[in-house]
Image (cartoon, rainbow, N blue to C red; front, side, top):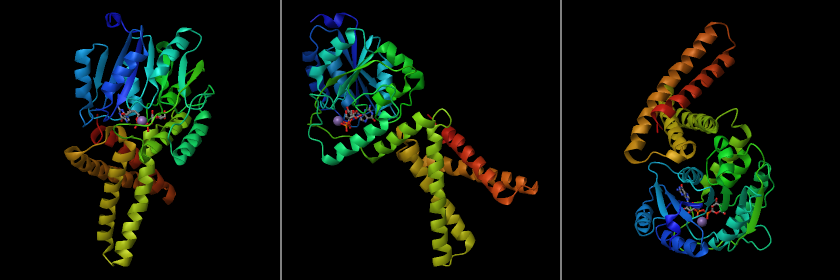
Amino acid sequence: MTEHLHPARLAIIVPTFNEAQNVGLLVDLVDKALPGVAWELVFVDDNSPDGTAENVRNLAQADPRVRILHRFGRRGLSSACVEGILATSAPFVAIMDADLQHDETQLNAMFERLSAGDVDLVVGSRYVEGGGMGEWSANRVKMSQFATKLALRLTKTPVSDPMSGFMMMRRDAFMRSLPHLSTVGFKILLDILASAPTPLRVAEVPYTFRTRQHGESKLDSLVLWEYVQLLMDKMVGHLIPVRFLSFAMVGGFGVVVHFAILTTLFKAFNTSFSTAQTCATLVAITSNFLLNNMFTYRDQRLTGWRLLRGWVSFNLVCAFGAAANIGVADWLFAHRSYWALSALAGIMVSVVWNYVMSAFFTWKK
Ligand code: GDD
Ligand code: MN
């Protein structure tokens, strides 16, 4: 085996989160699937609690074609893939799941197709002749088809499976998309296709999605929300940052929470207005904090002590935000602005303030 003495032509980027039992199997399968190709495997692990990174390190000690990029305090499939691609010098890069659900025996065909030089990207597709969904529930198939329909409005190239997580591409083509990527959520292929300044030349190879043997899927309802964020970013991201939209939506929900608590305490339980208002404010700030931590900052979620510290700093940020709100609204009203407009301006100022300051102090990187 001398291939590893040559610089890699093909880098296979594998995002991992809790895949300790799968990584060794994947290395063996890839090795069998790519005889005669100078490949390297770059695992990008988000500090999995099950020790995936440690297993990869052991594999790398036995085979220098195996590499690890270990991220800390971060989460995200798409961003893991992007950083993996940026960590290799190989002219061709593939993205593949660690859980053996993608069919590695197609890698060689994909590599040959790409080497012909007339396409930028080869998609492993479940929807072309010869491909399949494997054992997916009818519900998940339906959801996937609906998400695919939405996605096709954004891609500049029609592909049968823009939601696929299995692909191979030329590095130079990826580099053209790079400055425009959203890198939020799970759908890196869709992101790359929609971000390309000129349409990519795409070919497809069929594969059948296998059933997972070890570990579990990380696709949950929050991933759906990230998908919505990706779509929004692609549509309006050049005007408004999607994180801000998410923050403002949480803030809007906070108003609902505030009024729910206020009316319950003040009307139903006859507390004094000021007590009811204080409780409502505290609960609304706390729920905003937790929702933002869950949805707006999912990729850098605070936990443990940092959660508590974040909550304290978020309260401080919001206290100054409220002061700015009242100050601006008062000033405008005193200068003869219409009362509702004054209030609205105050709210806008405090939302922007809270967003910017909490990005600095609460969810600082
Ligand atoms: N580094 C990192 N960080 N890796 C992650 C994260 C994360 O936050 N979340 C998931 N992964 C890794 C998993 O360990 C796995 O190797 C791969 O990303 C896919 O995650 P799964 O949880 O197995 O997703 P899935 O099987 O439900 O969906 C996959 O297949 C679909 C169909 O091709 C994904 O690739 C989807 O994007 C794809 O649409
Ligand atoms: Mn999977």
